[in-house]
Amino acid sequence: MLPRHLPAPRTPSSMDAPTLRWGILGTGWIADRFVQSLHVSTKQVVQAVGSRSRASAERAADAFGAHTAYDSYAGLVADPSVDVVYVATPHNFHLPHALLAIEAGKHVLIEKPVGLDAGEARAIDAAARAAGVFCMEAMWSLFLPKFDVIAQLLDDGVLGPVHTVLADMGESFESSHRIFDAALAGGPLLDLGTYPTTFATWVLGAPLSVTAKGTAASNGINGQVGAVLSTPDALAQLHFTILGETPTTAAISGSEGVLEIDRIFYRPGPFTLRDATGRGILRWEEPLIDHAGLHFEAAEVARRIQAGETGSPIRPMNRTIETLEVMDRIREAVGFDFDAARAARHAADD
Image 1: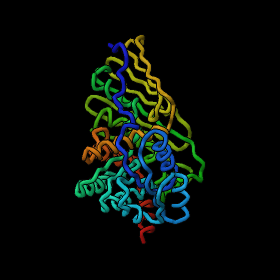
Image 2: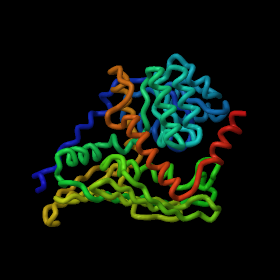
Image 3: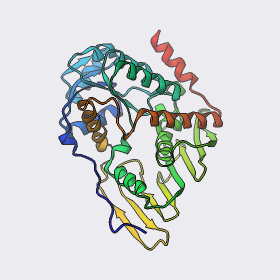
Image 4: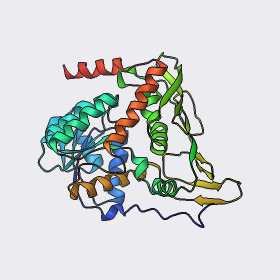
């Protein structure tokens, strides 16, 4: 039986979060969206930005409203005025750049996925634990008010025992886009597949079995994945592709009802809760602010760091590692690797 109304989100105001001084490691698209969200919706300070060249760093500092520009990542993490580092470089550089910041004693928020595989995530987690610094994956969806409402519904057992999770994400990209570049860990798994896989493991926990099939893109890299995750009592069916647009919706089905999340499921937006008869309906609505909602994760980081904590219960590192373990199993089942991305990383270090 459905509740009379949906619960209110417990998400605190991001404006009320304690102010930290952020160092932005990387100057790309997601870094820009993150910084703009901080400026609009928080009191966080963009203290410094680091890039591989002086010109790039100065352009980003001007765009980001940062106080200082560094032409090296080492310079950024050594800045004593930086409290926390946001790692926003390409996927295959998350590991060395996160470790660089951690070794400098900085707290870190690392763009998803935190590494190419679970082994890299474990290495980051171990380093952060040894250093006693805060460390978290920037899986921003889970910090949105919408997902807190969904978490409350699941905790309250409104859907009854869950038996099915569905999640899909597909986008169309120009062939020149970095997502087709094997040297940058291209393909749908890391950029897109992180969202459906996180969603499924967030709802069901770690699966007992993982099966998957893939389709190649025109240049030979993996272009599409369909996967099934199974637990003793439930199945999750996942799909992600860079070969074309798909609905990009998600659903959780239980014996007492179904929760359907509208397009684009991992961003701010609406969902519908229906009872098992299909007659009882509750609707969640919120503004479609897209990546302007990145501030919620930053506010959580600031609150936890001020409290002297080294992680967040909303996205603890063990759950991040669990998700990457599942993604490793998907990749192995489909039969592709990130060797070219690792080779590019090693070449950049030489």
